[in-house]
Length: 608
Image 1: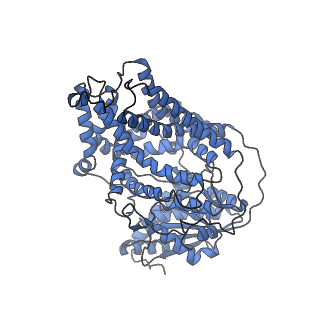
Image 2: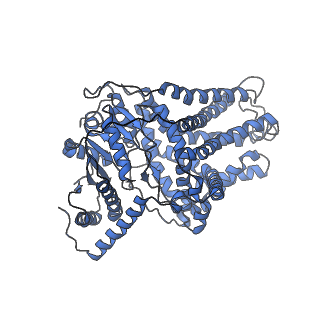
Image 3: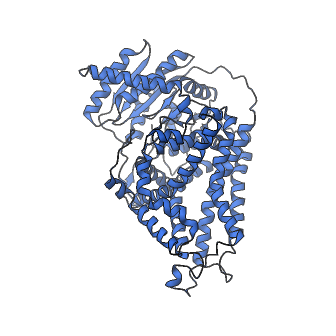
């Protein structure tokens, strides 16, 4: 698995001639051009907001930042729109050819995880695949990078106990590396170089991944029937949410995600992305094309590529292999952090990885769409400092020239723009339009739900669905400003080198005391109190009141995020509350069973 050279183009001799997905050019036109036109339209409408003497430096900066952020909002709307169009079209029925049998390894890298939780999931997948049968052969590999010897001993005991309960012929392997060199990247690379040659494909899973046998088989069939495919990504849906914050995320993913995912799949075509798990990969292609070198950071030091998945997708595409996204394959699941703080901690790691991608935008041979994926991932975090800068500028400028905070310091300085009065109808209309654009993708996603085969009755009925929808919208509005500030902090932590390494995720989340909550959300609280004071005194526009209130209440809202009371279930009803997937039930049963076995047999012999 040789390291790739980002300074030289590369073509894999084994990759077949590239083919383009039918109609992808039209889908890309519908995704990008309307977003660009809408942004130019907004810019034209706003250019007369300021002084008639011309656009000052600050005014030009303000308009640029607003336009830049608005483009990404409009791009989301257009992506969901084409997803809605695609879902409404009936795909022509095609009789699939019989797939070539493949040897597939289900590889699950783990690092200090709860062993019976991971292996309960593993058993549920192995049992479904055995019961389903088919032409393909599957083997499960638990690839441990665990550093804690006590947890490692539990892993070995869990594997031994699980092997004893599996049907004969079911393949389950366990390997623990002496050193976790290069973290997950090195873990996968070690498996590829030592065992990958025996398997035409590997299905990469996270420790919290759960996939039905049908979903795994469909991904395998798709890879077998497409000799040019290097990677096929499924659409992981969230599961297992109990807390307010996790249920909010799971509802959004389950209701709005299908239309967005369908839209992304349409404009990506053969140049999709990889999210690091729940995807099937052609092993030889990955070995030949996706070996990762170290990358220089902002301070010139060599560093491991953290968010390796985006880069690996770009390398596969650069070498001539297609990277596809099949969002209509159902039965692919993962979990989400249960509290706001757990989400923030994970987001800081992701921010560190995504900002690294800016160094790869000039890599030789990368396709334009692959570069866009890298750029889009970084922009997802850089937009938060931009939004915060707009918030500060709006607050300082105030409600007009006479009410501006800056008026009291430098009233005659032409450097500062004059913000328009918000009582004028066209100005109010533009503000309302910008707020509405944030809501439109949710409305379209909810409208598209029946097109995916789901029914509103699955959420407890129409009124229950409406209550859950309204609850999710209100909660997302409340938490958005807090997440904006936290992502801004994550950006500056990365740029200043304060974000160290890639610590494992706390799957079960934590219970955080008042001191921790106050330290984590100090900046939001202070910002919110300052804004609220400005609004009450008439110096800051009342349009910022929802943001000010959210920031000022960041500490209690963060505490609320982890609440798992019955109220959370009533306000945010999930489809799984009424019809839990069979594999989730099986996984929970196997976890409990395996934990009981270990508790009753604490002297279990470690696996060899």
